[in-house]
Length: 398
Ligand code: PMP
Ligand code: GLU
Image 1: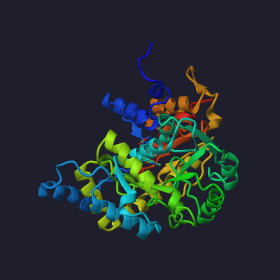
Image 2 (image 1 turned 30 degrees about the horizontal axis):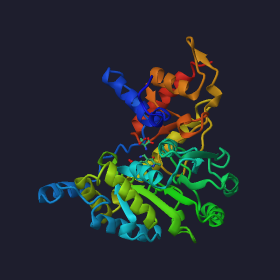
Image 3 (image 1 turned 90 degrees about the horizontal axis):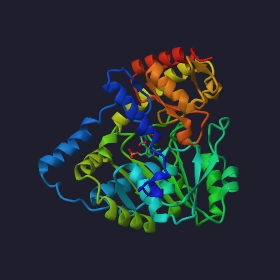
Image 4 (image 1 turned 180 degrees about the vertical axis):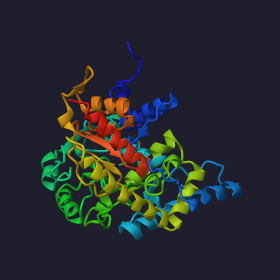
């Protein structure tokens, strides 16, 4: 009999991290694997941000526990950023800094969900949303955006999914894994539905806001009537190439911010002091490096789009943000090679890992078992080689 809790046995391992660990293992054995499985900028953290951390160490003032919700000057800078860039009004005491946006979202679900509470999850969704809702004993309700609508859920679909048990709605825009970006008009329509249900909390994950090729980022919290019920999630991992520093944050209604603070006060204490000083340097510094990185993602997007379009059986949308493609590859299901049959996209990803030495993630982990996710946060050379190898391996399947 297992001694583990139902809580932990009922959730899957994070598929993005599991696939990346597999690629790492193969590399350690000497196989030259190209990892397109994890959403991680391949750029270095900009120098002025590194310097923020170096200065903090040299000043010898930041070695003690920081405040649980983050240093006041960092929360002030985040509050100003929200105002300046997103037209959002969150005072510093409505901000909680955490160990990555991942912990920010986990805190919120732990803070607001009781058993049986439903959370509407726009699908395809970022892999960890469902597990986090389940860990908080809530029930995820998946609403599928169609391929034809760029995977975006419509206001009508949202309206049809709302029940008396709906506690929250979560989505990311720009979206991981599809790269889709909600327009102002689409968010207005979604807000129109939510205005009829003032008790529902909106969790808007905006971690890819800077990696947007379609124009200006729109925050749903800035639309009429939304501010007081929207938790805006953001962080430094993507826009500032700071995945390892682990800094994320929320701006939230005061009752949720206080509860998140209480949650992390029991679980982790405050976020790493030196990382917070680096994050402050990121907010106080110029966005030039972020803009340059986004330019590079834009040109890789075109490259990858052109290459993926040439693979038979791949149906590809042009993503408008983030750094992922989410092609529909269901035409490969049922095919085989050398006694190996592809029964699912998970099998296809394993085949591509072993045969093409490219790691990808099955769409099943994101709520769409017909697709796979490819991260193009990699060099152009690696992208060209990886896609050529994939094409060659896929041609063996019949
Ligand atoms: N939200 C989305 C949509 C993501 O892709 C990620 C992955 N980085 C996160 C949240 C969490 O980011 P982090 O914990 O690195 O800040
Ligand atoms: N968010 C990234 C991804 O989707 C990082 C991995 C993770 O945190 O799950 O690949």
